[in-house]
Image 1 (cartoon, rainbow, N blue to C red):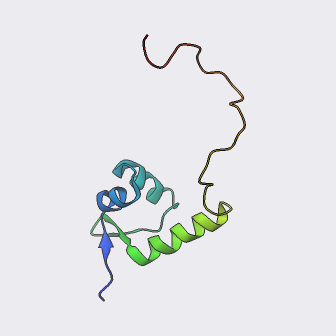
Image 2: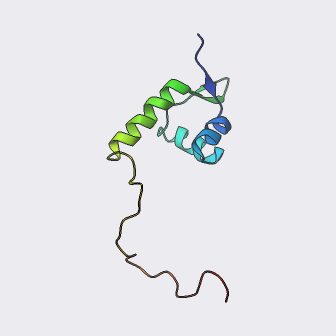
Length: 83
């Protein structure tokens, strides 16, 4: 058994989310995980497979350039930087 295991913090660092989000996803069954001695762990190979499924089920990767559509709702008329 030579498979790498990650903690929620390590996986969060890799994916760019907070450890709390990773724990929430694991508890909701959204990301493959298991517990050893009450500690949450993630198999790298299972997470890679899950990520690939997420990418393909979402219709592929996001386009490199944003769409040309204007926003449908105006959030604020206040300039972002003070003048």
